[in-house]
Image (cartoon, rainbow, N blue to C red; front, side, top):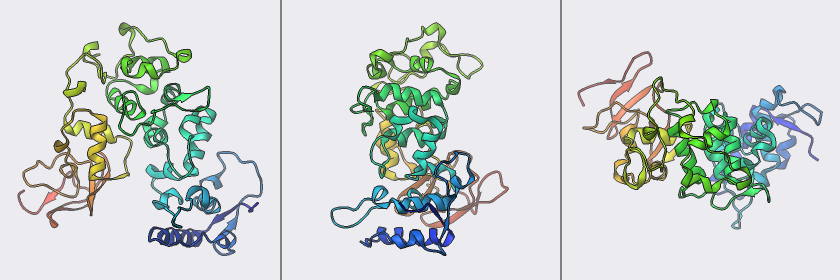
Length: 366
């Protein structure tokens, strides 16, 4: 067994260079000698049992070293002799807290340390691939920080008899009652209710029963609360029951296919809430909104209209959620991000966000 060590900054850089070579198509095997390099590694504490509060467990060099030590598990060899490492943060923890959960070893470790066996449903599958449940729940801090959401998702999507996920629980097309549909509903309910203050039974009672009821195991079926005893919303004046945000219910104003009416701005914010710092292609942005809100017109979802750093002529420059990158990539920053930098129109700099200013400065009218 390889003695436990940790990469120094030089060791991390050497590992990062290897990952870059793999992304360029290299078939070079992982350099096992790097794990013992005297200048690029250091000895970790020499005991076999640790406390989650031990400071060295927060050392990025430790987790990067572990990733290389188990590289065949986190980045398996493909049939053509190549490997697909993905982004560096899957193997080397970064400084951005919003991507800490993406590390293939530290992310699951943190979840297990927090919830133990109660989070078994989130940790199913191969170590090199995030499951849909892990991606949707752990990737949103407001959801993974809520123990009720963790227990509810286990009740809905985990088959206790064979210790595996239920069929279609992670359906990529957001099938009725699937995890992607649940997240969309929770994002809407969070606008009205204090989800952190609810029991599992209370939270389940707010879900559209025709859609989510069949997913709940009969032996664990929660007793649905009467409408008169629904949890009190965060609003000072509670809304009438028929106006509450029940996705897929028969009540309240709806778009096509039974969805509540929301503006495109609201749909984008609810779809990407908790995904700050993550980058998507234009097609991914559009598809994710359409999955969360059935019946939305595809042509109405234009992420370029919601960027901090580009402006479309004739479109009010007032809603900013994304940072645009080349080749149609968008990083979700959220509303009110302290953005600094140029604003461009067709590649030309036409304005700028300046630190300390309340809003953007444009060089001429737009």
